[in-house]
Length: 290
Image (cartoon, rainbow, N blue to C red; front, side):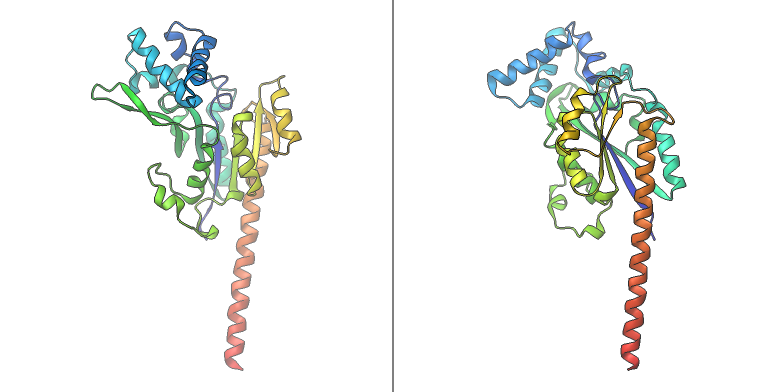
């Protein structure tokens, strides 16, 4: 029997790091405040009916041109170096992977974010993810951002849950993504998914994973749980936790229990399938002898 694979899917902004990733270096380098930058993006949305994610990606290009900053992959990656991660995040992945080994399962980590791919790629934790799904630019012959190549808003995030489940990880492969696939052939069963996010923009993903038998967790900064209360009241999630990834934190205890439970359920399912197969073979043998 192949090892069970459990997928842990994360939002990024305010889930793994303390605020929007652009606010640590990118916006400051423009000489703007966060409210000025996001306010300008909102103005573009209001004036031109531009989707919000596309609006902020446009403002990133526009402002860098105005300030004479070359918006390259390398520059964006450098902005990821100053991203502040929540307590315990740096050691979280090794700890969870080790626990998965102890439970006899594989753990895979994925990012599904409306943030900037290259900024995430520049963080010290990028190496831990099987895939990072986030907004990307296409670049011109000089290596500068020219146009959005991929924009992921809160509803489009759900597409990547399907991709991860089916194992169709290439974002350009829509044909295989949309082909009918038997549940038993999926690379990661929905019941073996854990989605971790921070609030309202994660609702479609949280609701989808929960409704399909997986688990959803909403995180909040210590002492500020108001924004996750509606998620509990509306039955969108399974658990809420303080955004603390430290050893023996509530989050670690809950995720480990989820992994243990998923491992046990899959072992029981395998035993049931084996027993059923043996019974069928025995019945067929008896029939032939009669």
